[in-house]
Length: 379
Image (cartoon, rainbow, N blue to C red; front, side, top):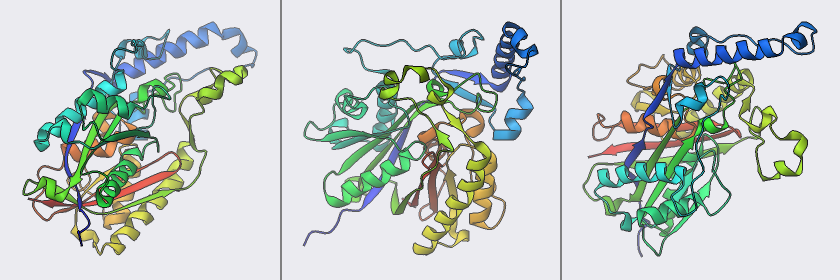
């Protein structure tokens, strides 16, 4: 009787935009917008019809989030006080779409690092927060652009910030079931496209990026260094505290077009209060199920949304304040990149681990949704 294939992570890839915005630049732009708004609406503000907007500050941003800068696909539009929106031109149907192009770049690095050809890839999962169109699927476009196995398959999935971990479990299940031996999970995120840069409480949160994870059967990888997937766990619990109401039905209710809820909105304090205990308990339960003691966990690659959340979750899991080595941060330079955050951390901070070291890739976000992937370094 044939044994069940064992899924492993053989490599990762990363695409980072060439443009970056510092907190200083972002605050200067936002405050210029505030001055313009208050000047244009002076009469209404004086009459009490609307409230004046308040300035932001670098200190406020860094204390609230730990973010110091972010990479973006279009810097000029974001920093223009008259626009406060990235400008990314539409491409003709005959040209690869921008999200697919980002994903392909990340995927090519993952394949190169694994010594694999795109033709070896049986399946592509595009797991991200925002797709630029309903169909055809981004994943199918990536599959075609890369030149993957023509007998394979591809599809999109969206579980907001947890899309990557949900994609990893789905890919691992395909490998175990024998439906694919090599699966690419790509996470292209242009988060600046759904961010309201005129909102003081959130204008600093997101950045743009793309990551890729190659999940394969262990016998495909052979003796090459890789990460065994010890166990995965997914969890969802419905909440309106992080929401985006943009969708194809907006045109059927024109009175709501352009409203603030058609971009990213959240109740940050409620999210913090509810997600931290949920994720901490989820991780602890999985560690108990897998017989992993806190002191045996070499490194945690947590979702890069908020430095204070990560600090508290890591402390609850480990039983002490985590060091940068135990829970590395990329949030300061990349900001929140939704599904890609924990994968960026893993990509940048995993090569130094030794054979047998244990680690955790963890995501959490809108939904609520959360995912854990416990891994062991091999080789």
